[in-house]
Length: 309
Image 1 (cartoon, rainbow, N blue to C red):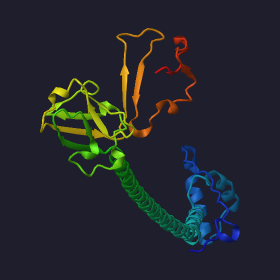
Image 2: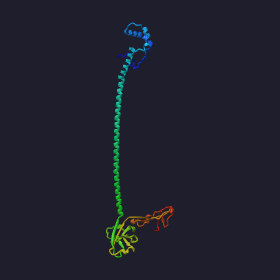
Image 3: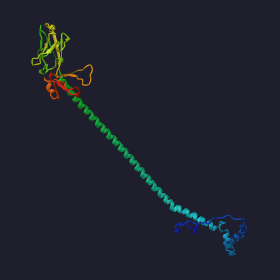
């Protein structure tokens, strides 16, 4: 179809067509309608007409009758719109669809790569955490093993420093002194001497445990090797009486003697036996600030060493 009426064409920059608003026929128009149609049809056939009369009637029916010219203009505008959509809009839409598809594909690839990267990061983090925990576990095991060895060494050292010794004698009538190196046990080392407190010795006569100091003492001969019976236990000794002695070495004991109740400034007596660690305990405590025969004021709550003992 030839477009010679619509302005919605590329050459004119797709100008918007203008259309007059249509109106309905009125009853008063009916008397001129037949004459107007006759003049229009004769003009279309090239027959002579009264042009002045047609020009007078044209404004009356211009917007009340749809003529071929008006309809063709509408068709031209419609075809122009279709061509515009086909030639201009469709290609633009297809280009945008392709552009959007490329954008979506790119974002999808980015998201997939991002997620894969996060998964790798999480896996690496978990693996590193597991490795770290394994290292800490191995370190802890090694640490515990080391401490176990240290504790074992301490126990062994304690056992060696706290060795238990024994010996047995077969007494003769009236025998009072019993040398630990002359009993049945010939493997007692010199360091097992009796440079310890008497209460650290278990002495058994005929199966009966004796009381330290009451039934026996350590003979003060400078060698710390002899147990001497007191008068309290001499009657137990006959020919062939079995006497057993057991003692620990390097064992200290603390005895706290508490009063029935304490008020402010109360005191406890502390008795310390150190065994063979030191003969003179006072030398170990010589740096205590309060020493002497009389205690300080109890309100001062200070440590005091009674040097009169």
